[in-house]
Amino acid sequence: MNSNRKMDRREFIKDVSLAGLGLAVGPTLLNLGMRRAPAQVGMSKIVIASHPEAVDRMRVNAEIAQTLVDMGVMQLTGQTTVADAWASVLPHLSPDDLVTIKVNCINSLLPTHPEVVDAIVAGLIAAGVKENNIIIWDRTNHELTSCRYKHNAGDTDVRCFGTNEKGWGYDKQVKIAGVNSRLSNILTSSDHMINVPVLKDHGTSGVTLSMKNHYGSVSNPGSLHGGQCDPYIAELNNVPEIRGKTRLIVLDGLMGSHIGGPGGPPRFVYNSIVLGQDPVAVDYQGWKILEAERQKQGWAFPQPKHIKTAAELGLGTNDPNNIHVEMLDIEGQAVRAAGKLKTTWGAIKRRR
Image (cartoon, rainbow, N blue to C red; front, side, top):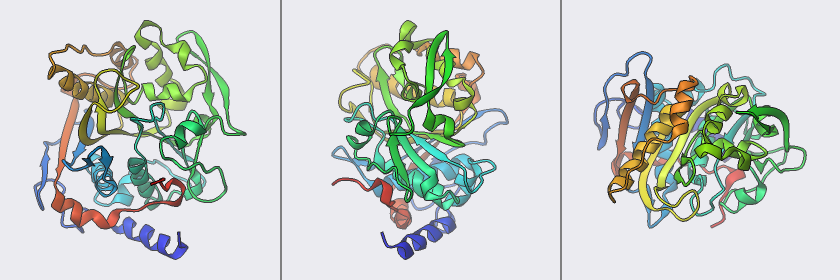
């Protein structure tokens, strides 16, 4: 990519705002529907940004994905520019800080979509994060490349590699509910982390959303599946390296699986991105979405045990009375106005 062109895009996105696009933070403009009420102090805020054409014939519309992430993070933070919104979720950002993006690529048929990560990367760069200080990661290089991510462990551009990359691996030892485990060095090296899970059910734990996504952050996830993964999921997310470094959760709900997960193809299209900073509230909301899909077929889907355990550990809330959900419904006219935000960064060019 031409460096001057890249700078032009970067400078442009720093100045992008809802008002500048003719969009409203609050009431409806340009077919932008927003159902909201003021969040009360102490409540966990969740934003669900949706567009009915985000997925077309099981392919993600990158332009719409960019808009959903941009407008979702602005709505969540109350900021009116993309750059300010991302800066607000990265407290005390320093020039050399490492910002990592934990994706979920264990199922190549339903992974974290690169189009969603593209949008996150663009926002981070707009907020002032150096490209080479961004790492997109999961367990292995193979899992990432099989899901259309481009491997890059070099000294330029956004990096993307697995914990099995030479020189990284697992090191710090922790006890997870009595089980010895080691944390990924990518995780322990992070100053800030963005968690980007997928909307999936799980045959053992019930759901695999933001908290279970960190089974890809430890050396021995297979040892943490007893008792429906409870209390292991909650205890893992209570370690300081996860609890203290997670800045934002961007749940990729463009497609989902409510039965037969975590493997297999998507079972339904949800056309949405779910954003929040409370992992328990995000996972509770994700469970409710999956529960609604199961109920369409008359199936019961009780709340997974680990969500309640995580709430009891103080990781967040699973009390619907303490979760404030704002629905951000974006129609085509708004996306056309915001289409100029689309940016593809060199480190995650997709194989077409």
